[in-house]
Amino acid sequence: MHWSQNLRKLHVDLTSYCNAKCPACARNLNGGPTTPGLALEHFEVDVWNQLAKDTAGNIHKLFLNGNWGDPGMHPNLIEMLATFGQYHADCDLVICTNGGMHKPEWWSELATVLKDRRHRVVWSIDGIGKSHELYRRNTSYDRVIENMQAFNSAGGASEWVMTLWDHNLHEIDTVRELAKDLGCYWLELRDSHSPEELLVTDNDKRYEYTLYTKKAKDVKSGLEILNKDQAEKFRKDLRLDFPSQTEFKCPWYNEYSVQIDPFMKVWPCCNISIYTHIKGHPLDQQFDVTTLPEDGFNDLSKQSIYEILEHPWWDTTLSTAIDKAEYKVCRNSCGVR
Image (tube, rainbow, N blue to C red; front, top):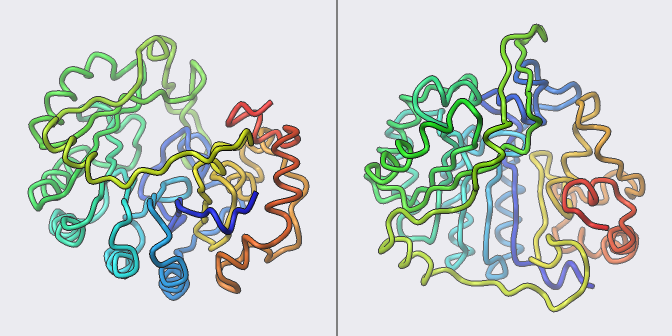
């Protein structure tokens, strides 16, 4: 195994700031206060530019995730995407967002920057009106729809993701038709991966209401094509990556991927990244990576990503631990046994 030689995909959290307070998110406590110990930071632009230069031509797919914050909250997002595009003209780009920040003009500008590149913005919109806002707390449904309209009208490619809860199941058909009307290429119905009852609290940890998933778990999730012609063109343009021919158990390694958090630390996946920042969160007990090397071994602000991936932890300690299912995070998140 050679993590450094095979790197083809980057999953990056550009910020730990978020405008929303989704109750199942690890960055807050049941929709209330921010998780204790989670620092609020943005990915440094200079480090990003160096990453783009160091990996020039090697990255096939870039995912801007929302594990710790929404990429739209980074004040330099458009500039950073333009810089990355200078070094990775053939790289596929996926941006995950709740879409509730900025004005429509900003989203039009984003679409203009991206329209000549293979891209997809994934909008998390969980129903219609107040139904959406029950889970995507602190966002305005009307503003999100207005922003999506501006992005799509300016040439952007959008996917609508609807997380399923008992309270929004009756809106699936309405969402499907609205997504078509707004020009979305795809609709994904997504399992919440939450318990049957999810308690929602305020910033003082006082109970507000409960979200239920008992009925939602019986609904089939998956991706639907809404605009066949555009989606097919997009698919044909995609640069496909083939899984590595290995029996190694880690799906991230098999896709030649790494995760980079907002604090510019490089990790083998988002789940191990999450473990390092959720002390005091109820999810903490699910993640027990106990064999991390010295501090700074994965710090992108001090060394290149390829220097980081040459550290023996990646190809020795980590590989052995995953292969033997020694990490609880691997067992719980990816089913590694």
